[in-house]
Image (cartoon, rainbow, N blue to C red; front, side, top):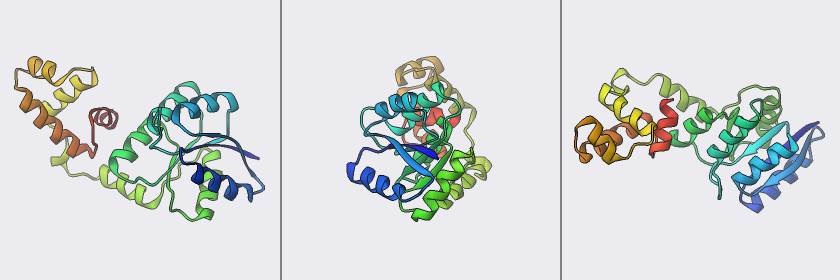
Length: 200
């Protein structure tokens, strides 16, 4: 029996997943969390075989929840189940330690197969997600970060503000912002935290 924890903030989606999974003799939903913080607590309490994790949740988002669960339970099998397939969603989730990444429009048989594979420790990626990750790996050389951009990102990773970065590198804050925009574009992310995660 594969024991499942569903982390999803929409009650209707949770109900739908529970009902769908109940029809499988080898799958059992043992817990449900409506936010990321509850998911972290229930993962520790229940030690499920597979955690189905949404990304956009209140209190603690999915990526932060994945990171915290992984820190406490390194062997946790976490399958992201979300509607979002942008680089700024996929990369941080994978970097945080997601075992797999599936989209909510996947056919139910694909979801069942993904859950079973995840429970065996296998990596499962939706075709669109796999294509995006491969595209990232094949990015042309000009998309690599410049030496200056790496300096800026290194300071961001240490928690420096734009003003502190400008002072440390003897450039203007406007130039720092320009570098950050280029970094976000090259890494396919939307904010500083995601940029640091993707760069790591």
